[in-house]
Image (cartoon, rainbow over all chains, first blue to last red; front, side, top):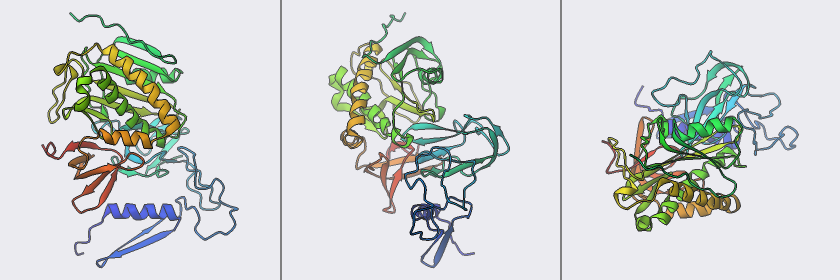
Length: 156
Length: 254
């Protein structure tokens, strides 16, 4: 398979580009290597087609809602139980590297229970379950950098 | 025998909770926040039995050093609360400089908010925030003694000067916090960033930053507008770092 190396930095950059532009996919080619990043249709796409009339875009880009992905796309709604990051930083799934994870998929959580931490500038931010439910999936890895609004977990 | 230290006196608008011994001032501040304590609640303890730093690392907390937490409810999104990490680091550096003027020129700030004396850590801060809107700023200053920690250089103010009691530092830090927090509220982050950079350790120098398992090295080029660390890595790429442990390149890799 040659030595094609997955450049996770580049993938992340491209993924951020998708977020910024609202595009559905982006392809990047350099030195014969090609990376294509496609947004899954369940993710919060802002606008897929150029829409001249702003009838759908309630709320606008300055979405201040914390913890709940409140992107009001008409048909392409994210999972309503998606927990998103209130800030840019690094996400941790446990209080310290030696501790067990706050939660794992399948766990039931109560409203207000801490499910992860996001660190930025040595400020540790509790990320809590907004309502009671079951952790369906965890979408990030401990120690991973994350962006504002990035989906962290799905709770049903 | 340790002489009894009188508790600090605080500016108007602040409420002191003082303890001879506590698990950790941040833990107590958190309990107080959950039971409805108001903004401006201050927790001060003479010793801690479970002082904590980043990633729950132990913060060794004998008497004679300062352990202080400030609880507040900033009217700002959590994304911007991180700016207060820099405000708090500056406040601690400036308060120490005011009380012990001899040290003023020997103190620097290591990103984002460790205070270094002659290049060795003498004060550390840990901030915690919650979706309920509170922010806790935990401050530890090595005044009488410095812990010995493998792989790290530490210092204490008492090794280089005859230091006033810890309560004086608590008073000076809270008073300075009060004015600098208001200044941040009215003037925003740019002036904080400027002043922080004026005290920055390793600016323009080779540093190593540990990001979990990974360590990156490069030149510390400055702060982004949001306070993120700008590192020019060996490939010439500029990295924007939001969380990590910074070391002088000469100290890293041990």
